[in-house]
Image (cartoon, rainbow, N blue to C red; front, side):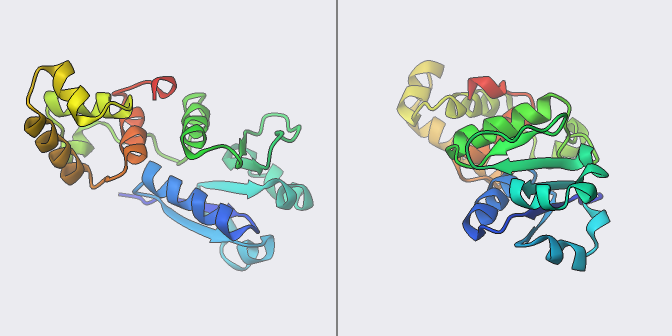
Length: 194
C-alpha cells in the first residue's frame, strides 16, 4: 500500500510536533515529516508530498511555491484565519479536540489529507470490530466512562473493560482522542458529535 507523505512546515517546534502527533493518530499509514523552514523543505524533495501543513508566515513568504500546490495546502494560523481564497486554514491555538474536529470537517468538505480515500472495509479486515465493540467505541467517543457505558448497554463493567481492551488491541490506538478520530474516519460517528 502506498504511504502518503505529509509535510509540516512550521518554525515553532512545539506546534510542529503537536500537529505531527495528531496527524499520526489521524492517518497512521502516512509518513509525516516536519521542517522548521522553507529552505529545509526545498533541500528535501518538495514535490513528493501529498499534503502541506504550512505556517502562515512561511506561506506568505513563498506564495508562488504554495499557490502551485494549492489543493494540497492547509495554512496554519495563530488565531484569526488569514484571508485566503480557496485555501483552508487551521487555528493552531485551538484545544486538541477542536483541532481534530477542524481537520475532520476540512476533510469532510472534500479537502483530502492524502491522495487516496480512507481505506474501506476490505482493507480493515485485519482489525475488524464486532458490532458490540463499535457500540462501545461510539459511547467512548461521546465521553462516557466505563460504568456509564455498562449501564447504557446493559452489560457488566468487566465486559465493557474487555471490549475496550479488544478495541485498543485491534486498532493499536490507546487514547480517547485517537479512538474518536478513528470512529469519525470510519463513519461510526459524525465529526460534530465527538
